[in-house]
Image 1 (tube, rainbow, N blue to C red):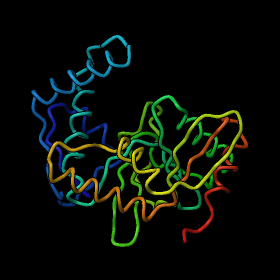
Image 2: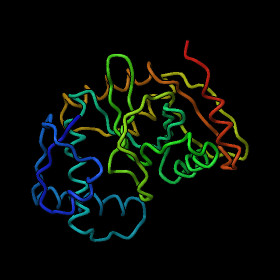
Image 3: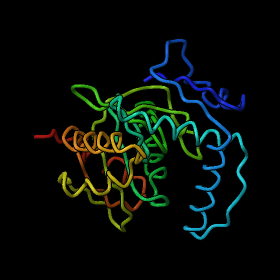
Image 4: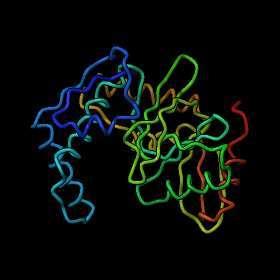
Length: 237
């Protein structure tokens, strides 16, 4: 999916520098000042809900948020979802970990990079795009990659999706689609358009059919990386 961006601030081009291309866009997003105001209001509301002190974000940062929101609104009609998770690839296959903020997604995928070394690649540490083809789900790097700024401009097939929880011991179990669906719904972007939302639900249904689904209890010790990797190697029936 190629997106043209008409931005207000030149910093937005630098932000997307590693993802620029010369091909014709599939669609164009254009940012207006009122969209930045909306992002600031969303930021304030989120901070108050979480008990944090609201802050006045720089306009260039608000534009980064506004751009991704506009992309996410139009993406489902093109078979693409914005998903909240940390995605790491090993040997060319991607493992996507999702959980509530603060659970330790980035900590766990860091353990994977330490354990697997050059075999591992961080695809996106926060908000990857999931692109659905006729046969597979591809996990895509984007510039919106979390506070550690870890991503790569790649599209790699999704091997498994894992709901991460904290525990004192490591354990991993397969998840049925009906068990996983509420979490997957919570962790994807919800478009405003009813049509785009219906398409989102359909894509989530495909996600449960095409990816291995697991729940991981993790103590965040170094051995947790190999434990969870081994636990997601069984082929789907």
